[in-house]
Amino acid sequence: MEQTKKILIGGGCFWKHELNMQRLIGVIHTEVGYSGGIIDHPCYKLICTGQTNHAEVVLVHYDQSVIKLEDLLYSFFNQHDPTQLNRQGLDVGTQYRSCIFYYDDEDVQVIQKVLEEVKQFNNDETIHTQVEKVKNYWKAEEMHQRYLQKAGQSAEKGCEDIIMCYN
Image 1 (cartoon, rainbow, N blue to C red):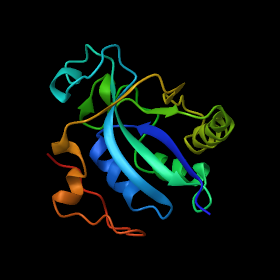
Image 2: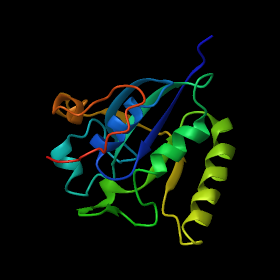
Image 3: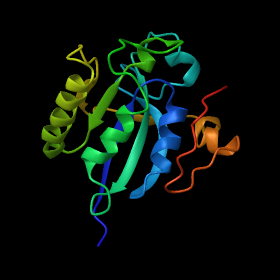
């Protein structure tokens, strides 16, 4: 029986994280958007100014009877460096920060456990991942939805091809 939950994750360009999540068995639906900011209905151009404090995020709907939140988060952390503050590689700005916005309070314990493991894996370096309850979420423009899949990269469940993020 399907047990659907949802969570928002961000850490760099949302295109890469969306494709990664699409490939996970147990993920039902993904959508890219913006969260954690101070204005309603932001657009990509505005969040790139750094004035709205929104992060690029992926809304992930998943079946917890198929994939545990813990495993979903391990996959997420394998795709970015949470020791970097407000950046991922050449992408610099608060919109690229590492973040997890949760809907269910019961998820906090799992998130904290995974963060502690990530810290240990990174030789106890500071982990800059913001963890907060969802306050807002705005769907990104259609051009950003399934961007890498539309550009020809496979979103097939279980695919392990390298994800190439480009614009």
